[in-house]
Length: 262
Ligand SMILES: [Fe+2]
Image (cartoon, rainbow, N blue to C red; front, side):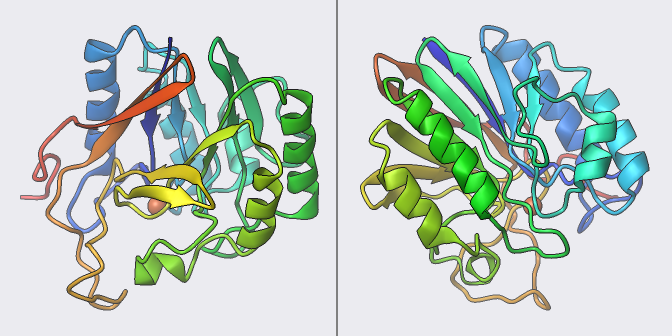
């Protein structure tokens, strides 16, 4: 059995709060909770939007927080990340693709692939020819093993109107690629700060609430000017894979008001 703790969107910053919520306290609580309850997990995946605006300071302090985890943590790129800052402060697996922060972990139950969908200067995502070629080659090389793919940006619209505007730009090309590899068993995507699940072209997918703040449901409608985080608790995912079957438990590690100003 392979057990993976999936966390996303900590939006870590060394100072201050986001909409009154403290991202440091929430990241620390998530790590502490996983240490206490999931010491049997293989590793943690942190699927992007690691930091805020202070690239050097935030990554330096983030590395210290991640060091509190008793499980190995594999951070990934999100739209709010910076590859140079990331590489300077966070350890990368030896097989990381040159030029982009994407890599694979090999487990007893298949390969776990962590993609880099960052587009410089944009909140939307990008998955260029070079990254697609790398993934195509990896999936072909390990065609006899199940593949579980983690990525920050969803590759298709989820019915979340504001988030759908900043999804992956080359979504169709990505889906065409993975549909050519029947060993792809599941997609796991961050970015939207909400739990959703379903299938796309027959491939199951899931998204996850953020460690930091939660996006509202699509109704009643909202826009970025009226945006207020949903009064929902943060969460992480506990993914267990065994004999070709995967289950994901959405897990609350603190309540909505935890780390709130005042
Ligand atoms: Fe985010």
